[in-house]
Every structure is written in C-alpha cells, then in structure tokens.
Image (tube, rainbow over all chains, first blue to last red; front, side):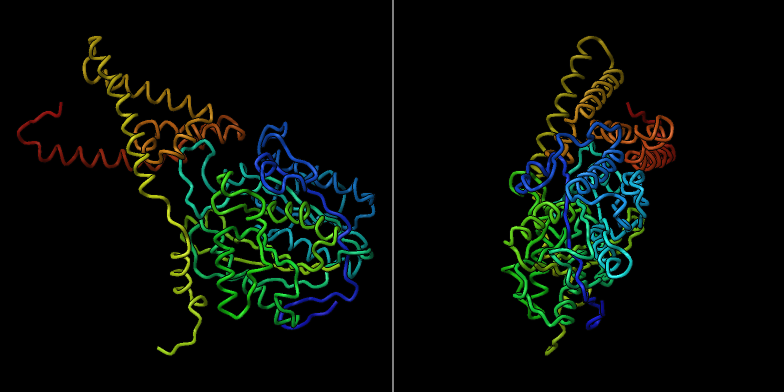
Length: 333
Length: 158
C-alpha cells in the first residue's frame, strides 16, 4: 500500500470484494433496479413499531443475508465498518449490536458506503482477512430527522431528492479472485457556499469534481480508462452540474458517467424529483446492481465515488453553508 | 476582462450557475391549484356557516362550528394519509385555511408518537405550528393595543 500523487492510495495486493448484499424498501422495489436487490420490502415498517427500528432491521438483515450467501463464518470477519444518517448512527449500531464483530461506526453522510469500503480495504492490507462494510438509510426516519413530519401537507421543490430506504453491504477479503479495489482517493471537504438543503446535488457536486480530478491527476488515468464512473447520490441536477464542472476543467465524462440516485428511481413515474439520496442509495445500488455487472464482466473497470453533505438540521437553521465530501474507489477485475 | 479564472471555481460564480441550473417550482400551476382548492375549502366553510345560520345560530357561533368541522375533517384526513396528498397538490390552498393548521399539529403528533405520549406527542406536537402560534398571537396582541389606542369613538368590531 502506498500513496501516489497528492492523496490517492494504491494497493500492493488489492483486496477483493468477496460478495455484496442489499435490501430495499417498497418504493425502490417499484424502480428500474428492483430485480437486482436481494430482497424488497412491502412496507416501510417491516413489522417494527418505529422507522428507526425498521432501518436497524434492514441493515441487520442485509448483513445476515450477506454472511449467509458469502459462505464466510461470522468469526472469520475481523472487523466491521458501518454507518448511516440517523443521529449518532443508531441504525448501524443498534442493527449490528448482536453481530459480535469488532465494530467501527463511520459517519460520512451519504459518502459512508465508500468511506467504509476504503477503511475496510486499508485494514485488509494489515491485520484483517475479511472486513464487513455496511450502510443504510430510510426515507421516513430521514424525513423525520432532517425535514418535516411525513403527513404534513407541504410541497417538495423540484431540486429535492428522495432518501432511499435500503441498505447495502459487502465483504472485503485479503485474497480472492476480484473484483479488486485497486486505488482509493479519499476526498477533501469542499464547501462552495450552497445553503439550500433542498439542493444537495449542487452542494456535493464540487466535492465530487475535486475528488475525481485529483484521482485522474494522481493516477495518470483519464475518464476513458473506466467503463463506468458512478457517483453515489448527486441526482439529476448534481449530475448535470458535475458534467459541466468536469468539462470546464477539460474532462469529458458524459458517455461513461452516471449516478446511483438517478438510476434507482424512475423520475417520470415515481415523483422523486431530483433522484435518490442517502447512505442506502450508493450502498444498495452498488451492492445490488453494479456488483452483479462486475461479476458478469459487463463492467470491468469502475470508479465509485460516494458523495456526502456534511450538515445537520441545526447547522441549516443557523444559516451555515453545506460542506460536501466525496470518496472514490476504483474497482477492477 | 481577459480573466481565465473558471467561474465554477468561485463561490459567487458557482451560486449563480446553480441558480440557473436548478429548475424552479412550477409557480403558475401551483398558484392555480392553490387558488381553486383554497377557494373550494372556503366555499365548504361558507356553506356550513349558512346552514348554521339557517338553524338559528348567530354569526360568532356559526364561525366556531365551521372551524371545528374543518379542523375535524383535516385532522381525520391527516390520519388517513390523505391530507399530505392534498397539500402536495394544492400547497398554500390547503395550508392557509384552518385545515393547514390542523394538519400541522396532527402530523407531528403522529410522527413523534414513537417517542411516547409525553415527550413525543406532547413535546413535539407544536414543532410546526408553534412559530405560527407565537407570531400569530403576538401580532393579535399588537393589533389589539393599536385598536385600544386609536379607538376613541368607541367603535365595536362586530
């Protein structure tokens, strides 16, 4: 493992993504990617009394699904990185409290999935044989914490995004047949002064662009090196913005760039405005859709960049701007 | 100018660019829907009021009955997961009449029931309506004082 360029980490023995699992909610189950998820739920509560409990159950069951299908015993997992959007990351810590695996709680807002994978991958270069990474989000619990009660009769602006109900998880292993995590480009916090909490795509887009350009400069690669460059949850507006920012810096990513938040919902039918968001967006779309594309060799080289808006409801009410972050990992066969 | 600074790399330039890039709410459609739904709600209120007056209630009592009925209907529809759909469609049309007030109290009460009746329902019930109450009551006190000062001809309001 060594640092190349300004901030990219390159692996000597790239860890393998052994397996992935995902569970999503009812709205995601009506979206275009429904058939790729391991399980889809019929209702948001999933038999629980509260949304918070439901979210914990989603991440717990996602991890259980992953462990049973990967064939790795729980005691073989050396540690776990997990996080979510709820205050103090209660979904992951409550959901995984019975797992009996050393646990690192991670917060990177919606960038948590790739942040967890990055940290997990680094562990496999030292002490760990198998590392578990998981993230979740829930539309109802996120609305409750960040916006208004669900039953309030208000209108969402067209720039607002729809928090994905779902979880994604993966096991990273020291040795394996790939797909391999070859490099990590951890992102810097970038704040371009956007204050509108209903326009997260615009708030996070500059961080995405910064990490992506840094990745290209550090590795000497260019956009055409990758079959797919995928952002976590920039949504439709963020997607357009980053194409413009990258173009203004001389990179054309139009043909191979897409966003998990754009892919997960059908904008025309599902009334999701600017697209999906949340830790579960990148987590479930990568674990469900992209991992299968890699396994089937339809995608051979991909760059997964999860973006996060590092704010909370207090900072918004106090008029603070929204700092963005984006972490990148390159995944190759 | 001759500047080669990328406008997307300055905060001001980026904000301007984002404002341009972000779609606005469909204001004319929203206004139209708010107008006719709001009008409809008020018409229903007027019909109830007329019926009450026919039955021999005075104006003040009729008004109270209208409020109670509209609040009851709005609270009921909130509980049935219908009012949020009306609100999404009509915006201010269903928000500004007393129906919106009922919705803004019932919806957090439902949402926070999971935190218990005291700290949840009781503590959070007014999170949305609270500011409206505070400033509404403050404004009415202010207007009352002005009325008291200038009302030298002892004009009564009703």
